Each structure stands twice: as C-alpha cells, then as structure tokens.
Length: 625
Image (tube, rainbow, N blue to C red; front, side):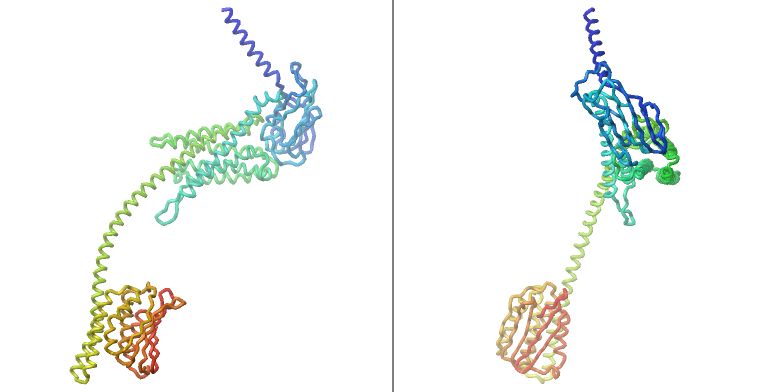
C-alpha cells in the first residue's frame, strides 16, 4: 500500500513538473500603452489586448503604436543562441515589430491604406534569446484598414519549438484546412459545370435541354470558392474595396444558388412561392449597392453590412425551415433528407458566425461556416452524381429501347427492300424486253418492211434487197449482243461490232484498218448509253458500206494526253455534200448522240469522210469519242 501511494505521488509530481516546465517557457502580454491616430486625431492611453480596431474605430482606418514593456521571468534560463519567438494570432492590417530597439519583422505598406491584408493569418516571429533582457520593451506599429478585422491580439512569447507545437502548427493546419475546402469546392464546381455543359437531352422541338441542377450546384461552389479566397489571400487581385464587395457578392451568390438548388431538388421550382422567393433573392443581391454606397460614404458601413448579413440569415432560416418540414413528408427520397440535415448545420453555424463576428465582434473567434460548408458540398456533390447516374441509366435504357426499335425497323426495311429489289428486277427485265422489242421493231422490223416493199414494187434489184436483208440480220445480231455489253467498255463494244461485221467488209471488198486502244471504262455510261452508241457506230459504218464506194474503212479509238477518249470512223470514199443529202440519215445519228449527251460532228470531202462524236461527262468535263 505504501509503495503504491509512493508511486502515485511520484507520478503526480512528474506531471506537475512537466506542466510547470511547459508553461514556464511562455509569457502572454495583454496590456499596452497605445498611441492611436484616427480621423486626424491622436490619442494616447493604456489599452487591453485584444485591441479590435473595427470596434473601437468603426468605419474608419488609421494607425496605432503599441508600447509593451515586460519583465523576463526569473525562472527563465536562456542561452544566448537559443531560439525564442513571438506568436501573434492577429495583427495588422500592416505592421512593424521591434524588440528592444531591434526590428524583428515588418509586412505591408505603413503609409498607404487598403493594400495587402496581413491580418488574415497568425504571425510567428522567431528571434535569438540574446535579444532578451531582464527588462524589455516590445513596440508594435500597425496600420489598420476599416472592415478588415485589423488591430492587435494578445502576444505570446516563448521558446520557438514550444510555440510551434502549441500555436503555430494548429494555425497552419487551420489555414491548410480552408485551402483544402477551397480545393474541394473547386472540384465540385468543375464536376457540376462539366456535367451541365456536356449532358444535354433533345426536346420534342429539337432544342437541347440541360439540367439546371448541375448549373446551380456549379455556380454555388464557384461563388463559395471566391468567398474562401478572401479568407486567406493576403494580396487580393483587386483593389481592397472592390475585393471586399466581390467577396460579399460571392457570399450572397453562394447563398442564393444554394437555395435555388434546394428548390430544384425538392421540386419547388414551379411551386406557389418559387417566383416571390426568386424575386427576393434578386432584390437581396441588389442591396449590395446600398452596402457599397455606405462604404464609399464611410458612414454606417458596418451597420449596413450587419443588416445585410442579418437579412441573408433570416432568409435562410425561413426557407430552410420550410425545406426541413417538407423533407420530413412521407415518401421523400434520402437525398432530400440528407440535404435538409446539411442545411440545418450550415444555417446554425452561419447564424453563430454572424453573431460572433458582427454582433459581438471578437478578434480571436474563428469562422466555422468555412468548414460546415463541406457538409453541404458533399451532399450537393452526392446529389449531382446520383442525378447523373440516374440520367445515365435512363439514357442507357432509352438507347437499348431505341436499338431494339432500330433493329426491328431494319428488319422491316430489309423485307421491304427485298420486295422492292424483286420488283425492280422484274421491272428491269420488262424494260429490257421492251427495249429489245423496240430495237428489233425500229431496226430489224423497219429493214424487213423496206425489203418487202422493194419486192412488191419490183423496182429494186437483188443486190439492194440482199443489202437490206443483211442490215436486218446485222441489227438483229447487235440487238442480241447489246444484252451482254459491259457498261462503259468502249473497246469491247467496238471489238464485238468488228466480229459481227467482218463478213460484210469482206463481201464489199473493203479493207478495215483497226486502230483501237484499250481505253478506260466510262463509269457514267449505262446499258442504254452503250446501246445508243452501238447503233450510232453501226449506222455510220452501214452508211459507209452502202454509199461511200470506199475501199478502206478506218476506226480509231485512243486516249489523248488531256484524258479525252477519241473515236473516229473514216473512209476514203466519194464523199457527199451535206446540204444535198436527205436529212433523215443524219437526224438519226444526231438523235442517238443527243440521247447520250453528245455532240455529233460529220466532215465529208471527196476521198475522206469522218464521223466524230463528243460526249459531255456528267462532272462537267467533255470527253471526245
């Protein structure tokens, strides 16, 4: 028992010694002799720290010099090279610090107002212990701008490593935490705005509709990101007063878009009070003009700003209370109740911050809305992602349904195409039969009729009748051959005609000169064009056989350097005068040429007759045949 009591007393003694040691190295300074210059007047008085400038001198900036004498505690045992430090939770806006006549640190412009704000972050100023004396004088000169929570807090002096462990590290962690909140808000903002830009569905009118939920969430987080920036950016990107108003507008925008987001989630955007609430939010934002006017006039700025913040909080209380009641109704989804919980937390934290910062201002009180906003951001992010997931699932279902309908439609179209293809093939066969019959009627039939009339009249000799019958037979063979012509193959067409007409050339004792090259196919020539060209060439050759009394017939087909295909039919016969022959023969040639979009050229002199055809390509270029 005695041993146990001894160990207990020993442990308590060690704990007490540790506590005394840890506190023996720290000294807190809470009073100062202050010389203050504000509104052109200078006063000197003893003051207690913290000295909150906006409370003592509302709506005005100025300068102050704090002289803080202090005695070095007797229980401090300092080595000259040991590192000590000052920890000041809030100082500024700009400041200079001297210890025993030695300047320790300065930040900001002491002469020009509304510059960088160094009151946003705590200050840790290390110095060597050799600067300390039994009696010391700490002098701090500050320049404080209005409405920037400037002034001077109590000052803690101690060993540097103790200050870092007890004060500096927690302060840095708070600043890092706010920056992490800003990063989180930026991510939610990018996610929401990206979804709003990329996710659009087509309406029955053909327009593209985007979900406003994504836009409201993205804009709310964007404004909150700006608001967070005002809490740790010591050197703002705008002049101070513009940056202050920008920060206030950002807070109002964050609040307004969050309320509209809540209305969208619960389905109140078309409700009875949705329009009045939206109008009030617009009016609330326009009241920033009144706040700005008060700031420029430097009269009642703090009061006006406090009232505006109060109106903001009252609006939140009313709307969010209604939202919470609505979220408790049976059948509400989980996301609505999660959002209601986040709203309650943020509203109460916001009211607390408004009371602490605006009604009973304290220099060392922290704003917790920055951290509570994470809960709302997480809930909003969850709702946005869940909405995207549901819309994606819906889109997939629609896509699957559409694919099924498309497959069914393709099947129906394939069946209809097969029926149409069958009908087209039957129609093509009928058309081909009709064409062959027409060609036989116009060619073979006409020649047979001529032969019959020649026999009936008795005016034609056997040679003429035989020639007519041979033409009929040749045309019959060509009509049959035309069924097997390849589209656009001019070389094959001429070779086939040479084969069919060789006997007639031999019977007429006419030599055939063949200068036909293998030329490219004409892709735009179909069977009808090939048939018309076949009859055109046949009629030109037949005319030469019957009327030219030529001994040589020459056929040329070649490709020129300028990519033209040239076909010529020439003989060395007696020739003819174009004006004196019957127009019927040439009209038939011209009609055939016109049917294939060609221009016919016939040149005849004694000893040489040339038939040339020029065909216009469908692309606009001209190809000579």
